[in-house]
Image (cartoon, rainbow, N blue to C red; front, side):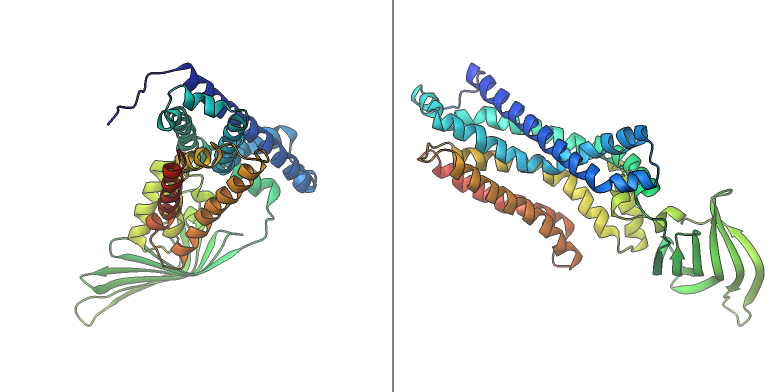
Length: 366
């Protein structure tokens, strides 16, 4: 078998330069268009909530850009490859490259290098930049864009530590109050104590809960049970007010270490919202991997010169890339319906389209 020559060539630099420059120019253009449409949609909210111009630019739109860059990166990797490779094929550049003794596999090397750079860029956005940006973005949205109407979570069950279980009938974010609060302690499969309160109000002064009209019953092995009650009791437990606000947009603002800690806590508590955290964790690695798949598919589809120009290649490319991205989004539904685990659901589109990319790559040189 002939060994692949990986010695750097001027051709490599030419393809990498075209790939990266076209990718970022296209990405900047679409981000600009998205920002214009977003401004036109939210201008009334900015004015009515008196959002400062400095905060709008630096706290909102500056943190808005990394998220949308990563969202559109997969689509524009494919469109970029289709666009400039089809143009090279139309100008007979690829024919000239292959006729000079460069194999199709060797021509793919700079494409893979470029895809690696974009994948690393996307991974860095996912793990380091976007979580920090989302923290400021969520704060701005909560202050200037979202209404302050109260919302309530109902019938909440948490295991806050081994043998300790909390039940809340409803929680109001308007006054940070849990209604019909119950804390049960179980040892050796037996209930040893039960604390009930009409309300539990979060108090920031000691980072704990202030229970109103509480009732405590300690269960003993004998027939005598101890009962205590009172008007007010302050307590600190492994449950904070932020646990009731943990939604999808706040999960996206956690860095990788914080996300893993949240998953461990939710596993211990038996929290149903763990699906959102697991989806976010796998998505951060699955999305960058798409750069390799879409690059290979793009080159395989657009490396041949076709009659009628590059329009047909771009049309096929957009259709395939949209189906891939749609499948990535749709796969999350398999998690919520319990059909697949988060890992399998988020990586299945990559596995499936990797096979399609492999088939297209195999027949492309022919």
